[in-house]
Image 1 (cartoon, helix red, strand yellow):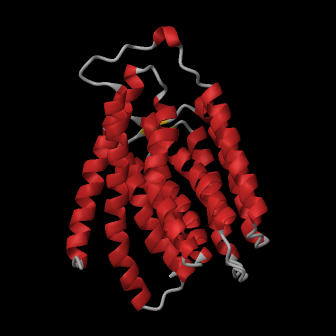
Image 2 (image 1 turned 180 degrees about the vertical axis):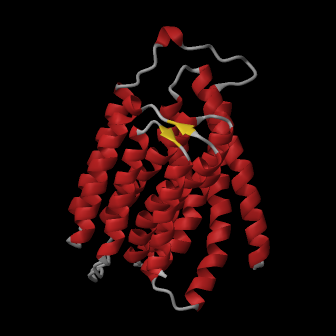
Length: 307
């Protein structure tokens, strides 16, 4: 058994190192193949940083703990906006291109509303999981068809850096992020359970924070390197993937016949409030420290409200 402190140190190092690998490889892939960096952030990097949420959710479903999944998705999406974007904007003045993100805003709005309705009316059924997965497939289809690469403009890769190498680096970086975050989660979860904290609260705080660490590490590195399209693409992609893909699959594969207790309404109020605030912040085009404090304040309130 690895001591908790050792897990913490290894986890932090893995997050820092692997987020660098992920950002550098994603940026190079976009440049070499004339792919929008926002698309790389929305797909490859978002999938990579959402791996912890997916792994944790599948394990929770296997153990019959649907409230873990709900708390994880809710907490992770709130943390991705309030904590990840809030901290990034605290240290860097971020800029956004509102016009380029209209599609992502539309789908994040739709999936967030569907997710909220499912939770508000406690409709934990396979049918709604299928609906979310269909929305996810539609989003991916429109995303790639509206951002097709101009073949004539594609830069030929040099012999030293092939696409297979870049994809391998992205995969290794994603895997390392998952391992690093899991090391942090294991110690924190044990401590939380020893204090008798509910599964929903653990999922929305400890697990959600742990599984959002890849987004945080990746976004801070992206901001430091002025890769704002990768940063925002990662947040949009991760939140849509968490709801439509991770939660959608969780509903489909969930075979627990026991009713899931309805979550308190304040979870949804904060979730919808911070998503709306995110859209307002993006419309301003410049995300400065004022918005950083606003986002961090909402996230801090949510954590204290749970605990």
